[in-house]
Length: 262
Image 1 (cartoon, rainbow, N blue to C red):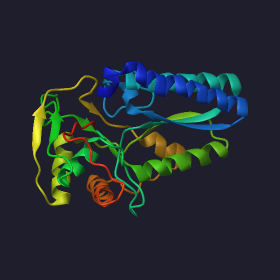
Image 2 (image 1 turned 90 degrees about the vertical axis):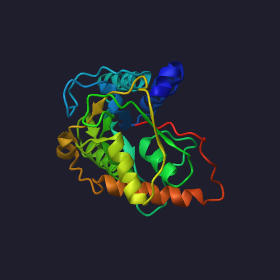
Image 3 (image 1 turned 120 degrees about the vertical axis):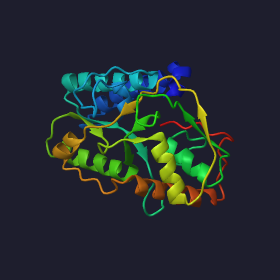
Image 4 (image 1 turned 180 degrees about the vertical axis):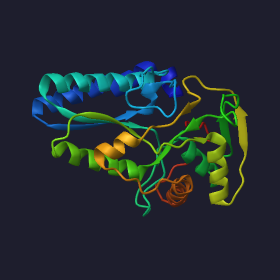
């Protein structure tokens, strides 16, 4: 999200303009069902926690705004053309395939768990914590982390729901439990069995202090049952993937200094 503050037009091009073109193509081709990857960033800084799907959407970053615009386009396309859709608002996706077949390999990735794992493996010299003065128990931001495999299952369940005649809907994808930045770092250190350097840095623009999902609706609507609702498991799978990816022939080293995005 901080990246979008620096490059708002790039995010509006990727997340809004391109989505508009895709939705138009879908409508023209007669596609009946559409699943959209949205984000918890559409809520901005929620007035209550956990945040529910019908709470106000007041994004604090161009990233959140660009995703919200696509949600609005889908709503209007559904009303005008009969397109049935599912908007899945991702919270913080992490982990990797439990069998080690795939995981996050983006060069210079900024997601906290990915960055912390790479720091534990010696691929980065240090990890920066952005903001220690938030109104949270330990002063760092709190996020709801969801295992990527459980998110994949939510997509499969969404398609089955739409094919069975389900109405268009918007659903949070999280576990309903938050962990602070320091909680995550401590978990990574414990699972990896190593210590690593952590630097404290000022807050970044666009980062809300806390955001945790109310996730009862995704369970009741889709019958979704998460299998990996455990931070230690998420970290262990991310660690195993990053370790194997480090040894892959095509692997490229990430940027020297970490800049974790929650």
